[in-house]
Length: 142
Image 1: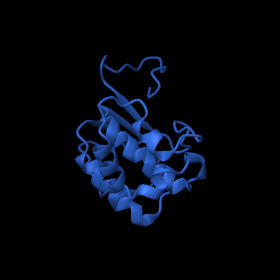
Image 2: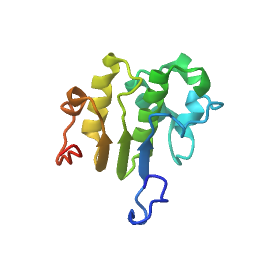
Image 3: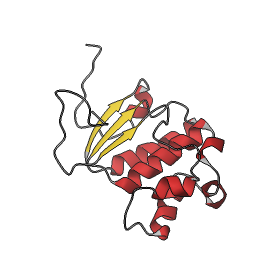
Image 4: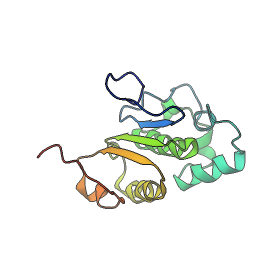
């Protein structure tokens, strides 16, 4: 669905889908963090990019590093910052707490609470899910 290839699923034209993959396959390991954040986003000011990045604990030094040199947790923070910058209408999150330092979870929960759009969240961490404003839950274990 996130890639637009699922049969039987459709997303309205013009709706941008943001996809957080737990394997970070949507990040190019050769890109710098700065380039990964600005990639494909038109009209983005450097000031706004750096402001959003800093909200995810991504500072000046980290911006110069390549994605491939980052820890898994840092890659996750880059993914979240990129999603905030993209402003998707539909957000699909596949186990967003995997690889994350527990200190980063409130930062991510805060960003998700500010998100204005539809969200599909897959998580096995109820403590994290409880920190997020969720309007409807579909429990697949029932």
